[in-house]
Length: 130
Image 1 (tube, rainbow, N blue to C red):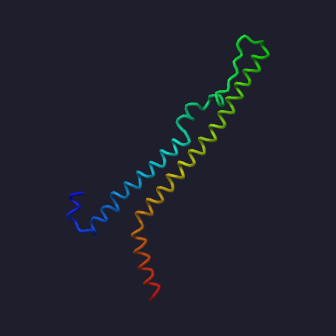
Image 2 (image 1 turned 180 degrees about the horizontal axis):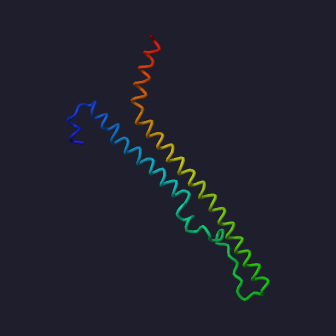
Image 3 (image 1 turned 90 degrees about the horizontal axis):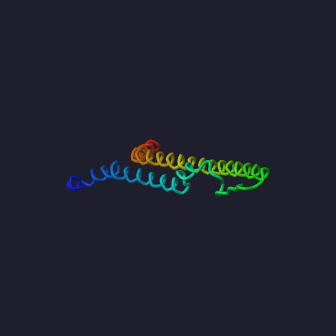
């Protein structure tokens, strides 16, 4: 910022407004996205997508055949439940991530256009007076 310190305040403001502030806003958006990624545990859910729900597994060693078959189907059922619950949470996480990026980009666009909106508003108010 040493180069900008010799500049008038007007130019330093615009350098901050379209430089440092935009970078800070983008970093805030990325921080929100990483927090949502961590809150929904998206990486962990992907790696455990086909694991049994709550690690609920029935071990059927040294049991009769009918109990082994019953345990096999219970384990399959537990994996199906785990898959669908994790899939729903993943979808909610991705929808939330999409909304954070969408709202963040809309805010960035509004930030970029805000000075022009103010100028247009002042011009239009004078236009209405005529």
